[in-house]
Image (tube, rainbow over all chains, first blue to last red; front, side, top):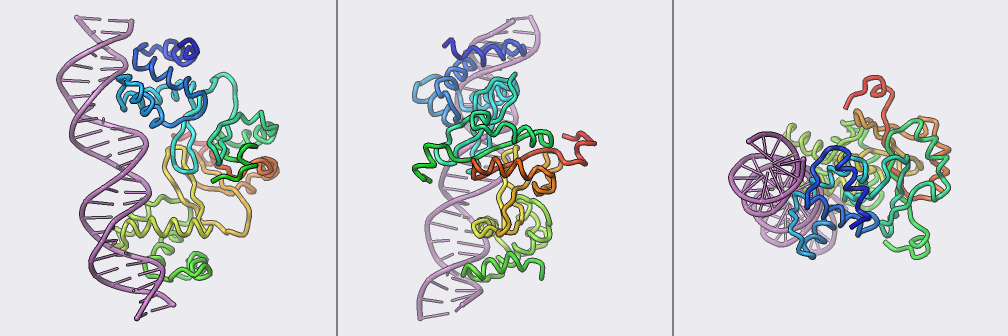
Length: 139
Length: 139
DNA sequence: ATTTTTGCAAATCATTTGCATATAT
DNA sequence: ATATATGCAAATGATTTGCAAAAAT
């Protein structure tokens, strides 16, 4: 409720209306504390009987992405996932092929390599396998 | 007709049947000499009145991807594109955000950085902006 | 008051599947 | 002959859109 501030703030800052459905989506995002798909949220909203429509969820996610408080990631499966992120801090995520967990690139000690690539590119999507999944070679 | 050999060969090598529709798809892939989507090929096939069904094209693309003579790339738009590639040679592609053209990463002189990352990851998708599009900041 | 946002249901679009027929081996 | 592959049309699944009603400014 209070942790969804950054998302909600972004709306306010950009002059968008602060509506109940948008608050709800912000809550759901925070509750997931990690990556998720639009459908995950739609399911969450449905289960909890929050009266938020499919379309509204998609629209809110688009909006948050535009405001750079969410980042959209294209999973190798073709699914689209979203990750919450701080807009001010330049960074990249790496998505685990095994479990889908998202890590920041700096945490892996490969930040310099990324920076070098960044000199040449705008956008990176990284997929790997997190320590947990490297042990248990799940698929 | 002769340049589609690598694709067709891969089928033979792996023991798949050498069918007309698969030959046609191989031709279409080669004719594109670059990245393309499934729908591009479906359109191509339709225009040229080759009697190849949608489903068959998807199936052939899947097959070629499995055989590693094609690589499937997830564009930032969410579209899926395919790029022909030589299976033996370990590499990555970089997709231009502007025009969609695909370049091999070595060509950009950032191969070392990639290699470093590779130590930690399985799969990379890179998006950037090719020289042509850097000049003309198209969207 | 006015403009933005919503929710719904219908529309779209890519991709997949079932199944009877055709083809490669 | 027999197993594999095809084509069609129908199914699926994610995302988008039109539009009248509701909520935020």
